[in-house]
Image (tube, rainbow, N blue to C red; front, side, top):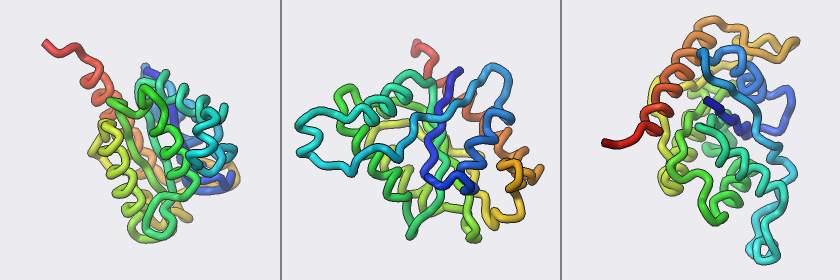
Length: 186
């Protein structure tokens, strides 16, 4: 099972980037996780640009989504929502023919210094995925609150064992969710 991660933070030292980089160490047997192509090179959405053709950066992201069995968003919360760079990437990809998010299994994770752990960003991301007809995995939810004390910033990974354990549970559940969605309907 191949899963792609899309990180909503561009900062290499961000807690969300650390979560995304830790995921390959926590996956259950039979699951591979790899990072999506970078989203920082995607231009601001503009229908005039789209009219001339989709940028290569958009096509590369879309192809990584299409070829994956599932997608994990790992994103911070900016101003009660998702970061603009992530929203922009989703807006571009959503306009492609053969919409890449349609029927795609999605998991969401977030880390924040705040007490809600990015919950409002996750809520908005779920709304977007409903509109795009993706299938969002529900529980366990990963909202890492008060993140600073839960990471080994020197090696760029999650160090808090309860948090690692919860992420392992989510990844195992997400794997089952993906298999159920791919199973033939009788």
